[in-house]
Image: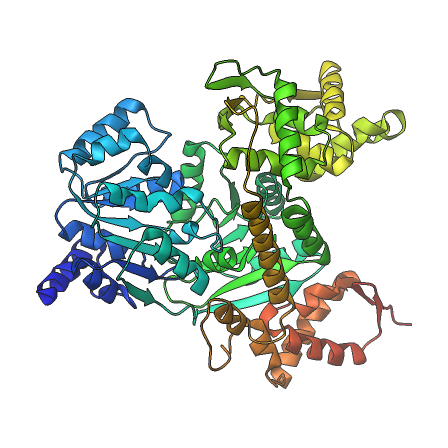
Length: 637
């Protein structure tokens, strides 16, 4: 029987996806699901995780219910399945209620093979009334690590998925994740109430990805050198939305073909950027972690972390988006010492305690002049930036406290991103701007900051962030707004203040109660994540050995392809290499000087040890002077 089913699975694989055979553990996982077993499958990024539940869904009777954490991920999966003429739909909060009702009707009528929903929707009475009338083949829990407090991106609602057993006591559950260690796997089993189950663990070893780390105070210079060196498509990851826009603009001004991507963009804009990249019309995406999940682009040649990842799980999942076609690719972290300090400040030092959260909540009520009376909830317009400046706590702690209040369900936000950013165009020339230095230092500082961070600002109106300007100049938010309005009134700039259109929703909780132990546990997890990333940066042996050990897998011998492994090899340069290298240095020094990093990272950053040897040899033979990070060629005679 199982052979007949797996033969059918292979036919479907060929018919819809065009592959002749399964990859790694796919066949074993699919066989177990078709036999009706509960499963936990640990399939690292690029291992074809989605096919492991999509193919059984097409074979088994009924509809497979897929639990997924992100709307963007749901939309991407549905779009791809529909393009293959597979009857699949997703229900999420961004849809019109009429569309949702039509999808749910098709679900209960048995017209769908897969229905994607969030874990939160699974708990609603409305959805449960529909599910009673449907025939469920099995439940696939995607990104199952979200169920564990030790897992990457913990989501409390994932722990309530097993409540569905109140309706379907014997329902088959199949959990999937790309990143989980032993503790996380134990939590998945426990909270899903799996009982007997089959565990599948694919190896975390990436035989075609060269892992590397570069410590430099000139990060943009190093980034530019790497982009020149690497071929093909790439992803550059950052932590902040505004940071992606600024870096993308800088890289474009240097002649690179990039676009930015983050969750603050409209669905249409995100799709436009994603499609341009998938079609290779855009070479590089500069993105927050919002990009990449569920996107299947096989020819990504490099992934660069320009900001430090928050955890080893996040790092490995994002790094695994390179080289899915099996060809050699690169994953590089670029950092300087300040990045480590900023990560600690942002993730650990600014993590709020219960007192911070309570203070922020009651200040929110006073700031918004809220009186609950008998109302279940109160909705009102909200100036987030103004509140952050007025709250009596450090800004980062205020923002984190607001995030915690939203996470625990005491407040919620509705945001229309179409109207979220201000726009500005400068009407002055360079001379007129410089003249402000002596007459109005604040306006001069504001304009210079905008010019530095924004491309083409003299030609057209470009998006700006008053918050970012405030951070970079040191002037408070209200002062920035005041001076921008004054310059607009004087005709110095064309300025359209952004209408963030943020709606704050207060739930009826005059007093809030938060589990102190749970909050402390999450802070300990952040400390662990920070220490793990810091240790990875400082590790002096094989990169992959460190990563695999973290995921409870042993690597018997070194990978041989990471920067540490390659630079530790006793590899002497040849005379031909020295001659070629010397000629290139002479060319670089033709203007009189060159930066040290240009010479050390010339050719490939993976062979920088060899470059250092050749550079020493070259410098011995000529008249050169080293000043800081520069090499100067001294004039003869």
